[in-house]
Image (cartoon, helix red, strand yellow):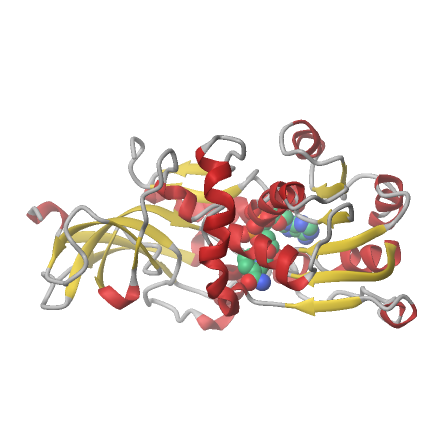
Length: 337
Ligand code: NAP
């Protein structure tokens, strides 16, 4: 490693946000890295992930002025660790920085699949794709021919869920997103049968009733609040809700009023189940077995929303919270990687 990269860069949180975070809540700092000691390796990060859960971390899980956690893909550039040869591509969770010192049990050396880029391990083959896969197969137990509704459908989990629902044999796939342009993409590029802009129109419930006139069997909830209430209202008997996230409330200063129709779960024998993908890491191999042939053959493209440059990490994070991404939001540290 040359002296010039002994000094790495990192983002830290410097104050707690009040509602929607702002750039001033973060600071970019210099990070002096020691030489790797026995059992560790130095990784140069190539791709960093920005995710909605990080907004929740900002309220206290992340301390001020400390190193931030985040999913990352990097290359080992110096190593004193068995099993981590120089040059290997690894997945790890030392995000928000250009370089990290890691141990072998903190990283996954990425398998190399023909025709699949490493950054897919932040997209369809990463936590994002795994979340959608677990939601549909393990939580909602989607059956062929069923109607699926997906909120935040143009985002990372949403686009992955749309692709997977199709591959798993869903009958009708319906999505909601926050702009007319995203809605167009959902039906023209991402294989959704119908989509609507939740910011337009009378209500989510009215728009969902139009997009799924015969009701829905499965709801993958990324949003919570009014979306969840509308989905419960549109759900057929014995429907299933995989509750994945509640981004409508992450920046809110007060708790959401909806859903007010929770008791309909009883009347329609609906199952609502929340889950954390972290509890389903054993599904990763199954996901790869299922998706790699489709990805390698180009039948299913990964959808990444790429921001270039480490200095734009906070822009990417705030932009994702505002809905500026289509597909999984990632930061590319080297434009050519
Ligand atoms: P994402 O969907 O790529 O990005 C977030 C999207 O949320 C934005 O693009 C924006 O799109 C939408 N959004 C923002 N504010 C909103 C609001 N008030 N109402 C409705 N939509 C809003 O992010 P992701 O990584 O794929 O995550 C999606 C959801 O899954 C999040 O709730 C996240 O917390 C959850 N998640 C859960 C797990 C788990 O283990 N349970 C794992 C991963 C992710 P629009 O333009 O459409 O508004």
